[in-house]
Length: 267
Length: 288
Image 1 (cartoon, each protein chain N blue to C red):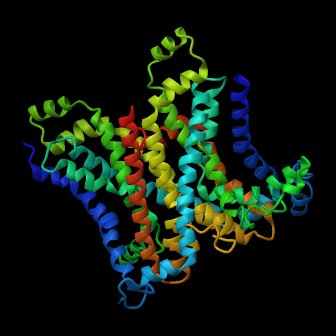
Image 2: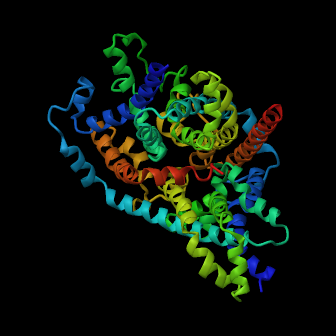
Image 3: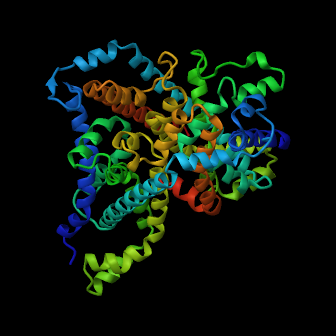
């Protein structure tokens, strides 16, 4: 039994690691080497591949664009979701109806909203701007953010609100003084989820931007295939540059990231 | 005192965003789906013409069938593989925490990057798969996995089907809530490892089965990057799915009306899929 289990583990490990390792190795080869000796180590490590990527493409700019969109959309969605989640700590009319209205979007395949989102962003004058993309990301992820933060706030004892009310604090004061400071863990969890989804999104980013100045990393990766089609190792180098930061950050924060990514599903 | 007016203040921003990004789009999709529109000029009401041309288009039929295949692959291959890995890691083999971290890695790297990677892994001449087959003397099996119409769709699904980290973690999280006493009792009764999986673990993670099926179904309905980057929908539209069909109708053909008619079909398929999944979970719940 143990042998069977370990062979399954090893099989999956191979699928995870070998393609990535192969890509990294290949990014240091010359083009003819890639075809003639696919499994050998590079004869001479071609750091030039990396240099030519960085010289021909404003990769730092793509990073900055992607980071801007991810941060702005995350802050926006978290702020809005935290406010609603706080409201749901109180009793009010049609509470469950409100909840359904604000979270039914989880089950909508938002790729069906290509045209409306394009229309809205254009109408707001935000086509081909970073904020336009960030706004759409915040909107699309809002239902799941509400779910995550509301679930966290439900673990806060209601007595804390009652005590604060008895002390004479109003709803706003209770929010800023009592609830907000202890809700950060829930907000962080949702934030991790939002950052990673925004960082990795392709469909709306390609739909809502067109110029080099607003290009995100994912849109850039999409174009690597065509711009570097003559020289695959350079395309691989571009790819390594694009995913390496994610892998490095993940290796330091893997537990937090796994928790954040799956928080919307585990309830 | 807390008044309901104050509560609405906290609800207002979320309500605004929900109206802008979910309620209005739903209405707009229906509106545009019944019109002929190139995105710039005037819209003309054409009734159900867009739907008629959709259902007459063989590419649309392929896109619907392929999307359903993706969902089925998610339910019947991806989810069971995730459960299998979770069952193995739940026995806490040496280094299981590392393994969990490694298996989850593809869920952090973008699908765009993975699509790019697998385009080359399955590449006909320089690909890892074909060269691997040649190296072990099975060169006759090598083929253009992504350009051969008989394998393209399945080859396209390979990275999704094999990268089960997310699904696995959902299962593992629920498994960690099972009381260890159940296993101790089973051991006293002489249960084998497989019997413990079969009669304790699997029945107690059925919630996670439901959650995973819901998440993977939603993921497959939205699937865009793998078909776009690995095959571009080809060869001969054989790997087209609904996302790519809508994107092409809008961006390439400027047929916004047709694109949104397809959008409406996508939302409808999503609703039907979710209803089926929830009905299935309910029936399963009653059985126990």
